[in-house]
Amino acid sequence: MKHLTLLFIVTGVASLLISCTSVSVPQHRTLMPEQLSIRVTSNDPNEEISFDGAYLFQLTGSEFKTVDRKTPFEIGMTSKFVSGIFHKKSGKGDLKVELLKQIGEEKESVVSGWGDVIVLGTTDDSKHNFFVQTF
Image 1 (cartoon, one colour):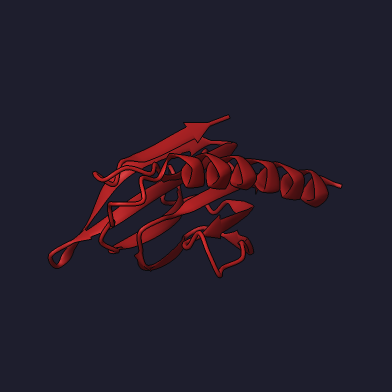
Image 2 (tube, rainbow, N blue to C red):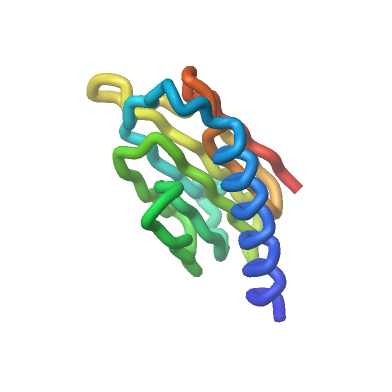
């Protein structure tokens, strides 16, 4: 039942993000793809946390990828868009989720959040702004 609830939440958030994004995109501008990554860890490096979640790196021609893992976890790709939701299932400490951007040889954390449920992604504008929301 928990997985079904999470799936409904993910689907709702994704639908909202995608519908808002596609409505607000001016047709005359193009974002350059960037190397973006999602990193999921524990706020205590000595504690392992079980989590599940879903993420999407493309608006078109892609489906949400689901994960049911333990920390640490990292996934990335070159994209103009990313959206994800992650849910702590068990473990001590808080689940920490970061959105990283490749800058030269280094990865820079552009937003991060910690808690039991974390939603993060890109906003759709020419500056590649990022957001995170925790619950």
